[in-house]
Length: 313
Image (cartoon, rainbow, N blue to C red):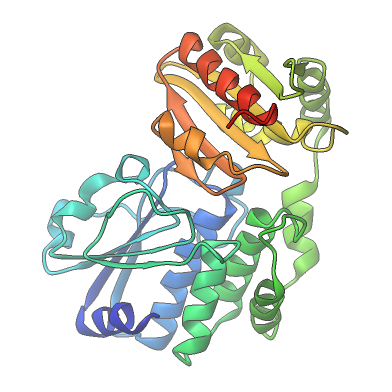
């Protein structure tokens, strides 16, 4: 599955790694993990990771992005990780590279690169990178293993989501052959300070239910600004407050920003991805996202989700 990408890595002296914007643990983990796999196995090559800041995942090793000039893309291989659509790629200079590749686990939305390795059966892009290292018989360092494991944990919901498979644990076991502290990972991922706990409690009180029991939260731009929290914390961070409500099979978090309304869609039962795609987004069958223009469009999406929950789609 990875032969073409491995050949291109061997053929290029400079490799530049991209991933989606507003990175989560899987995006950063796959980027940092692959960066160190390449450096450890091909020390003569230049490897750079680019994109916006790590945000709440800045605790991860080597999570500070490289700053490089446009000229570095000449004769380089650009690899895009954990990204289903061009509009989501952080740093669009990947188009300057003569050869592009993608490794991704999202449902296919569009062709992005010349060489594409996509397998949505994996719970995470980090799982795919681990498989790449295993199948290609590449050395794995503690830094790369720890980064990949962190991404697997976050994208599988600590191995709770139904995307978790026997292969997930096979890859996790492979990574844990390297010495790293899992307690350190979990402490950074799940420890909350008092302000975070209070914010979560506030957002729990904001939950509303539609007629067909779709749970949703809507945060206006004024509410976002007054919360003191960043967009990622409110948008992706608070969607989980609705995940364990009995009788709720679909939930969605709407967050207004200067660039539109961020929509985080989740389900424990239905494939909500087609609705995300309808509104210009994408992702997984049960975890997708999109950005819509305004509140009216967000309410149209909510109506579609309500129709799905009612068995009309």
